[in-house]
Length: 121
Length: 121
DNA sequence: CTGTATCCCTTTTGATACTG
DNA sequence: CAGTATCAAAAGGGATACAG
View 1 (cartoon, chains in turn brown, cyan, yellow, red):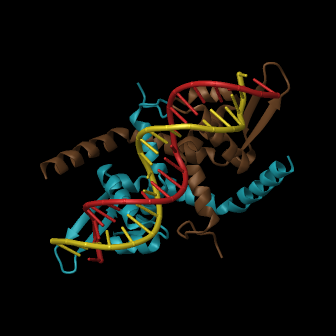
View 2 (cartoon, chains in turn purple, yellow, red, brown):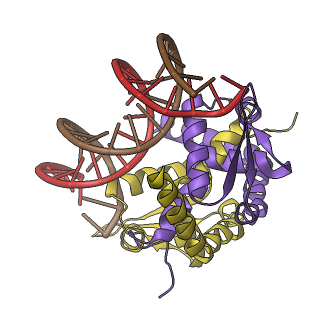
View 3 (cartoon, chains in turn orange, brown, yellow, red):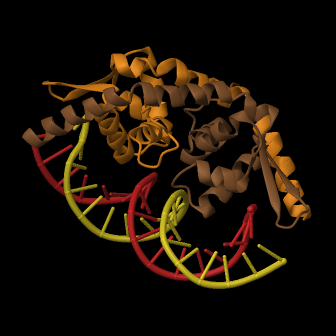
């Protein structure tokens, strides 16, 4: 039987949750152009806290989308990079990013209309 | 200046949040093959509560991705359908769904490896 | 620099009961 | 049928302190 995202207990649903995750998506996109250090990710992705960035990276590493490489240096340095599996997601996520920026104004216009309509009763 | 999803306050980030939303994605995909009633959506999308389904539909309606049509009948009947804007998302979301089902086994394998590694210390 | 640990507040989500 | 209201539980998230 095929995995089915509509099924409550299907693993594919969890996979979708990971992909759709607010920070996961941004982390993967940030790693699109190559290896990045922890601090570079933190700087690029505005608004992510240390806690959530670490948590997100662990999740992506666990799911085999990202590798974590610790360099034995002082001060320590940790590099993150996409795996082959992670790279297969790039086009899809880049598409979503593109959609979001391209259709932003349409969405905002729709919101204004909706809110005006609701206020009016 | 271009909308930028890495920017904390950019509207495109909110758009991405809506798209990436756990239930929004499934609702849009369910509406791919045409108009659906509230109860049909609820039945198809396992595990969604009445509250979350309603909330998700309102959000999608507000953002101009979905239309809501109330038929004055007894019992009441409400139809939901994608807008033109909503349909522009279909290919992207279908791609994600496909990715999730296609790579499920790889992700699960990666998880097993990771968990075994962590347990071992 | 790259984390981990903890506290604590906020938001999200789910279960349940109820209504036009 | 298609919701709304309410309450409790869980997850998300920020701030701070501390460690290798």
